[in-house]
Each structure stands twice: as structure tokens, then as C-alpha cells.
Length: 215
Image (cartoon, rainbow, N blue to C red; front, side, top):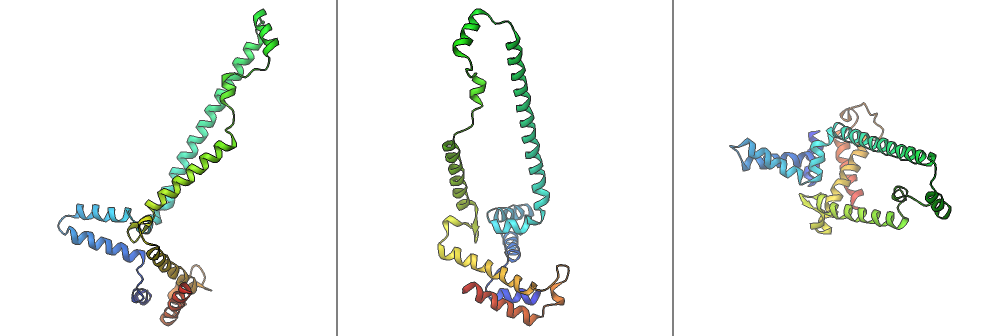
């Protein structure tokens, strides 16, 4: 693995783990006598970079995501049960009222205005297609704006970097993806790559990955 890492570095590529180590070294260098301050500085650097955040915490994604989804699912079910209970209560009240003897006033009004909607019925009207489309557009626009601020490239929001820098950043990750694809081709999932890939083959795969990325 050292040979492959050296080959990447010689090509000017820095993996996410390399950048994590760099950030940790920079934090410790800035606060050599204060571990707490170094910790805080390192944490800030990681949180401002999407790639570093994923590299550090991605291995815990399932443990982090499952409880959130479970909690959200429980709240959705509770809200549905509450809505069903409210609906059943409203129907029971209306049925009881319908079973009472009708007064002359009520009968007259029923004859002239039968089938009128109650406020509760009106409140249950489905939103219009235009309303749904407008809300969807607003959500999409908000997501697009937030990504320009939260998606980090070389430690900065992607909205603040030049197109050339963004392309170079993406190209490096394309090289990594293609390199891994090449050296894992034909190797079973449970087999260590070192057993099947020689250092020369790794070097050749890296050169090909770079050529493919620049094609």
C-alpha cells in the first residue's frame, strides 16, 4: 500500500486520509501545548470540508442515520394515528347530531342548504397542483443554494471557487475511482489486493487512470 500511496503523491494526488492527517498536523502545530485547542481546530477544519467530514465519520453512517430515520418514522406514525382518531371523533359527533330530532329551523335550512361543507371538511381540502409545484420549486431552490455553501472543495464552499479549481478537484477524485476500479477488476471481494496486484501493475493502473481522467 505504501507503493501505491507514494505513486499517488508523486502524481500530486492527496487522498482524504492524507488531508485528514495534514489537518491534524496543522492543528497540533498551531496549538502544541493545548490539546483541547488543537482538537477544536481540527474539528472545525473537518466540519468545513465535506470530503474530510465523510472520511472521518462515514464509517459510522449507519449508526448515525438509523436512529434518525427510526425517530422520524415513529413521529409520522404517531401523527397519522392522531389524525385518524380526530377524524373518527368528528364522524361520531356528526352521526350523533344527525340522529337527533330535527327542528323546524334545521329542517328548513337542511332543505335549502343540504350538503353544505363544515369548516373541518373545508380544512381537509387537498392542496392544489400549483401549490404543490410552487413548494417543490422553493425546496429545490433552497437545496441548490445550500449546496453552494455546504459542499466544500479544497476547504472552501464550492460556490466560492473557480470552475477550473472545481474541475481539478473532481478530476483527482475521478482518478482515484478509476484506479480502484482497475486494480480490483477480477479480484473477489474477500481477497486482499496485495495478493493479486503487483507494484508495477498498480503503477500502470494509476497511469491509465490519469490518462482516462484527462481524456
